[in-house]
Length: 236
Image 1 (cartoon, rainbow, N blue to C red):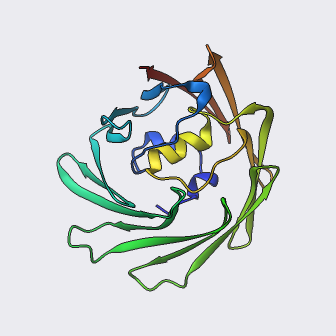
Image 2 (image 1 turned 45 degrees about the horizontal axis):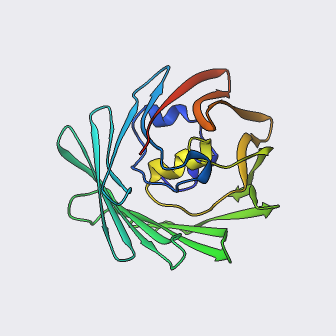
């Protein structure tokens, strides 16, 4: 699955277990609390463990297990399903911790793969170029920003517009932060919590429940599908 595709597909897809792993940024509002379970009203949930440095160590989703390793500016996440190889993702980071390029190998020998190369303007992602081992014509996603928020993505002539709750700062548990957590690396920081994705006449909306300053639940509503996601935290 291509990176950034989460901006074009519903969160329901995550419960089907076809996404890859995660780690994510901490937020002052959540203090030292980390999400350890994501439980949906439909589909498989996610479970996370962390190492002594607070980085994601493992993620499980149904029969899928992802193990993370860290070295220098590289994050490697290897996913197995029922104990069998599924994929290996290698994310190379730049100095500020954002991904410069991410290669995902989908065969055990590494011969089948796809890769995303990211370009930034300062700390703002502006371009994602996708290539793969089948020599596909490179696919380019361009990204627009306003007021510290990622507000649009365009790929193959299709533009998705993103709206935010401008009175709520981005934090652990908001949709975009959750996607980066599951993805296993970050390519942006947004100022606020995402409210909706709009592609043509299709609108996907997100509502949040807060307790003690943390997001404890997310309601996804898109294309006639409503799913509620509950978060369990571990706090130090």
